[in-house]
Length: 181
Image (cartoon, rainbow, N blue to C red; front, side, top):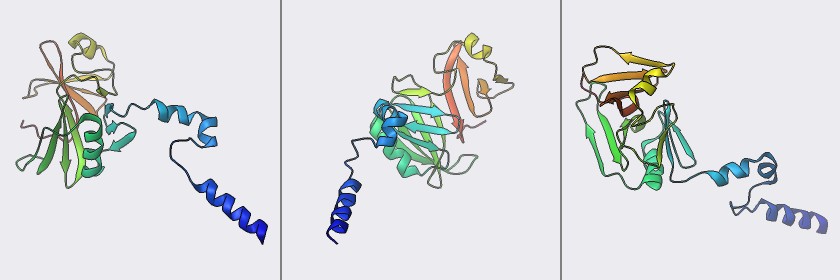
């Protein structure tokens, strides 16, 4: 009985975790290095959502969770609101430092727009704000949207799009937008 109690106590102690020390499996696989290397201030925009610090969000992620993660990485939103006249239906938005706007419908992330250059915001594509027109057009997946009423618009691989102004990429977006065409 005494050995059983000692064994149970040892198991209980081993179950305690401070959250700061990687498990042996993580140390062996190198996952601990990945966690340690995550820049908690970095936001990466993708064609299917975004990553904020160590958290990744696909479109349809919860509005509260996305806003919380973005606030931790970029600071408070400078403006929030709702546009009830979008062609896609009513859309809530939040504008963050660095020129990032995130769009929500029915409490879920549905899109993002990037209109500025910020060291803590990157795009997981071969194009970013300020990329020269020639470099963007040279991308294998680049397709110009002919007759766009919004300006020189393009798509890259179907899930990431943008605009060119003054011979450089001036805006990038993905997902549902409230553009009036």
